[in-house]
Length: 196
Image 1: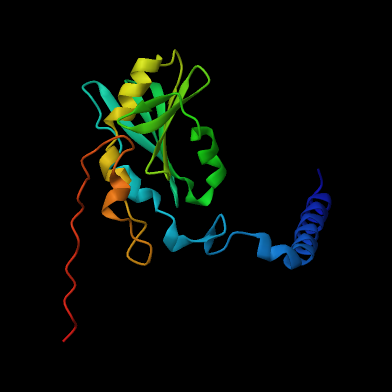
Image 2: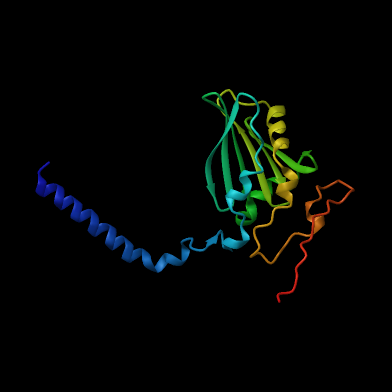
């Protein structure tokens, strides 16, 4: 391809991008910017807060975090070089339709609604907000192994998670009680001292 033709194609491509940008500007309000699914970012838990709640790797296994963003964190459970499962936590406050599958669960794990999604995935809804998911990879995991992994997450810590100090809606102590349990979980209440 000649040099003139390459330059001509490059200029046409740049012109097309500029024209596309100008035409797209009226629709910029549809683009995410400062919000996650129509919620202020301060109301959606940052993915880094989820990382400490993932299961600890057992002997011969490693947990490799592969994706992290506001409202979501994902890791791979590896045994040697082979990926055994994908593990994920997501904040469904930005996608409330994700909670619909938990409306009439058949099973519960540690009091939280549990659903099966096909033959390789199990999901749990914690505190009516956080979806915890295990998806078998390769030869996969059986249902019992997936449930074990779900139970190895710090579910109590997840239930008590607060999006941040900027959030005015703090959970009440009873919001961390799994359905069906009688004893409440008492969360410490911070003592605020007046400024001098």
